[in-house]
Length: 324
Image 1 (cartoon, rainbow, N blue to C red):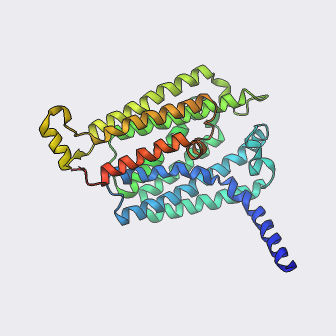
Image 2: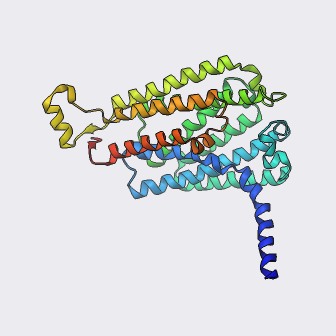
Image 3: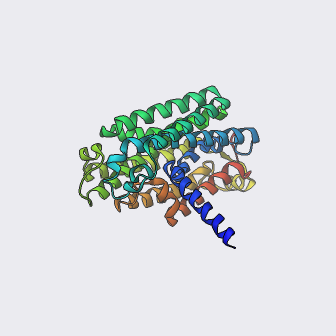
């Protein structure tokens, strides 16, 4: 019995040693990399095995790449993070991981990312390299430049979408790309708005770019990009929606032009509007500093996203419409 207790204690200590290295890689942020699968879904190839496997490998590669940049950023920000009410608990800032150990982890993760990316295809490899390079520049100085910092955060989402498209050689609709850019800017400006709200409740600003923003300015950004996000999604559903083929829709069209249904994706617009309105309310409550945590914890938002995804998959793959 004593021997078993000793083994359990030893195992606990090993976990305690490993935990900071997992935490500093921020696995919770990997949810953002699910954007890589969006070209797979919207191109109608979700259930083609070879495409799904390539997209999944791309997702893993991007997880390595994003984690590498997060660790690198934490190394540079360690001193400032110690002054932040939340970031002070990060492994590097709190001293749970040394700078040299964190740098080694970042290097290993970045190497794994580019090696795996190269095994998928050359275009995806260059996308991963470009993403890492952009994030290194962001960590070094671009994060301190107002407006540019928001654009860089938003660009990260666009990189993910295009990375997923390169993997399966998919075409991206102009309207879909506009929607992605709008949502990315909405999330990025919301992140800065929430950060500013949290900082204003503490003794000082830990990020230089935040000193260049006011709540009023960021509120206008959030409102502007929130409107652009739902409107661009509405335009996408109008111009690129699959045509209805189910006999029911055809029967309704025969009854009256008023009941003609050719833009099935438009039924997702109310859910998109609700999701944006809900997230915007969280932004103004200063609860959106970490978008990935909000997406995993806010029940109304989770419910709307799940319903939105189910409707999209039903429309594209439920046999009620044709992409042709």
